[in-house]
Image (tube, rainbow, N blue to C red; front, side, top):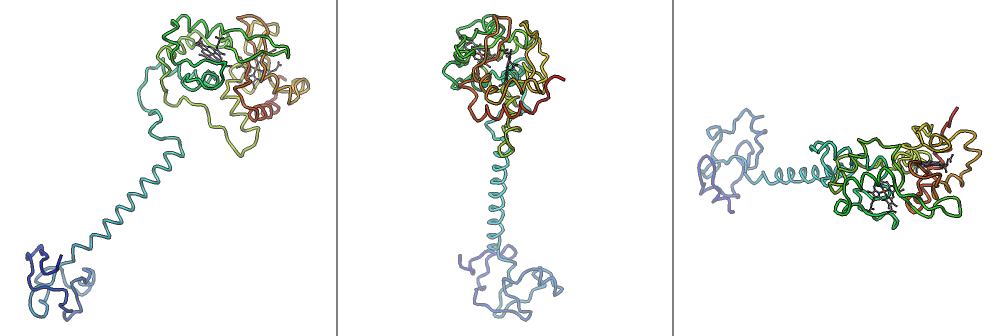
Length: 309
Ligand code: HEC
Ligand code: HEC
């Protein structure tokens, strides 16, 4: 826009002002910053301004100076959005995650948390979506083929593992949870599965640390695969089992380390066992579910445990 047509907010368009007009006695131009004028004891009011040579009026600051300010605001906004996106992704707080503050049916929420902490999700996939091992069914449509009583019964009684010639079992089987889960917990799991296994805010396995060594990784895996639910906190045992032993065995300690060198630990975890009929709980078969590097990490962790004193 030619300057002569520029509308002045005090005087309207100034037909005489052109960019060729020079400086006044103070050395001002149209672009003189307001701070310089105030340093000279002059205000920005029109009466404090002497007319330029050849008449006309000095303008206030040109409105086009807002351009760089707007550009700076836009750049800052883009940076703020980018930083927010990076932080959101680094903490796993992306918008696809369920909102932790959102209300959810308490029984379904509890069932969803048990489904992760008892490692149902490790075998059946998160939200029962399957895809972990061909021997383990997805559960998403189970509620249309099984009644709540049937679902509760298979959770409590499991489906016995088939003994294999190596002393373990032929493949992953559904463990017996009768002595490990309470009636309330089985009911919450049954309700959660009956509802189609919806996402539950915060119900997710812990992130396995990398770069902290096998023992730390194994400690997290011991929780994520629900080993602790059967073998006790810190592997100290004590969980009742109607078996010859009377309890699910503790892990770790001098005797254990003697009986179970590293490879033997990995073999038991891989192959599981059948030590009796329901309601006796046996060791689940984790071959095909726990990858070899994680077996190494679990064994390294178990070898640090105290065992019974
Ligand atoms: C070690 C792996 C493993 C774990 C852990 C496990 N399951 Fe299973 N589950 C199986 C296998 C294998 C089957 C298939 C049993 C069969 O029909 O032979 C199964 C079957 C089921 C079924 C019946 C599905 C159908 O279509 O017949 C339900 C329901 C079920 N599991 C729920 C659970 C719940 C709840 C948990 C956690 C408390 C759990 N499972 C933990 C392996 C596992
Ligand atoms: C559903 C309960 C249950 C879960 C879950 C479970 N275990 Fe076991 N585990 C057992 C039982 C019962 C035995 C005893 C088996 C036997 O005597 O043949 C056993 C035996 C073992 C043994 C051999 C110790 C011994 O004295 O026989 C090791 C090692 C072991 N489990 C590690 C693990 C690890 C690691 C996990 C998690 C990945 C795990 N277990 C999850 C029930 C469980």
